[in-house]
Length: 72
Image (cartoon, rainbow, N blue to C red; front, side, top):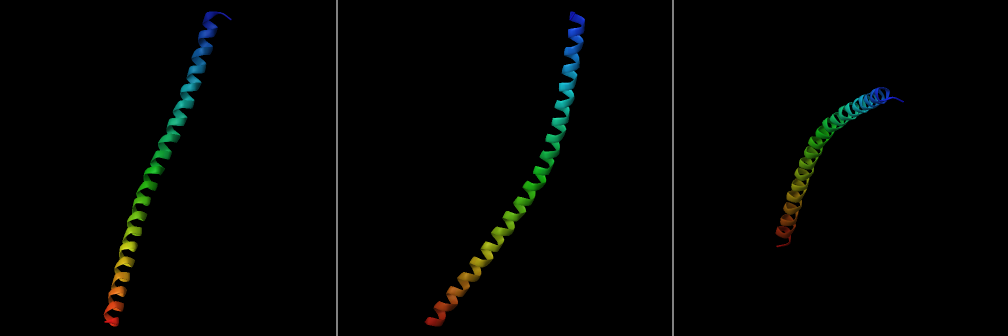
């Protein structure tokens, strides 16, 4: 194989690798966009969970105070 043929083969290989890299970067970008949306949803879920926990805690404390007042 002469040097010109080998050079053309190498350039073809590099071109294919760059195409593959471009496809993988596009897929990575897509996955990062989905991850961003999911992270926002997880944040909202955490806020809802914290709100429910605080509400239940407040109700439980009110019940305990009421029971203590009834016993006095």
